[in-house]
Length: 107
Image 1 (spheres, one colour):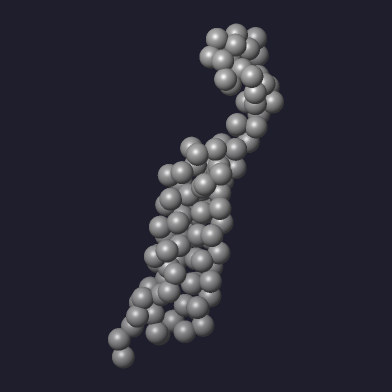
Image 2 (tube, rainbow, N blue to C red):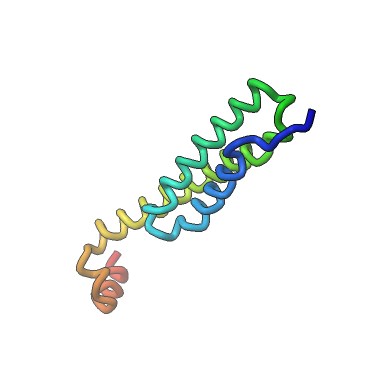
């Protein structure tokens, strides 16, 4: 009997990688991608554990979970930095580069 590929394992890996790549998009895009990657990877690993002889490997699913977790952490850090930046220098300073430079020097 030929083994088939594990469903959603490649999708989990791709979404995990995209969550890392898009962490610079204010956490808006990458955070949901990372969460979905972790969920899909966990489901794929569960399917593999129920019937390991039917599927080739669990490697992509495991890598998807790991990259998804890394993406979630990076996105949360970046989102926290943006919130801190807005709270410390103000929203108006983000619109005016001279005001931003002045307020950053005063921190």
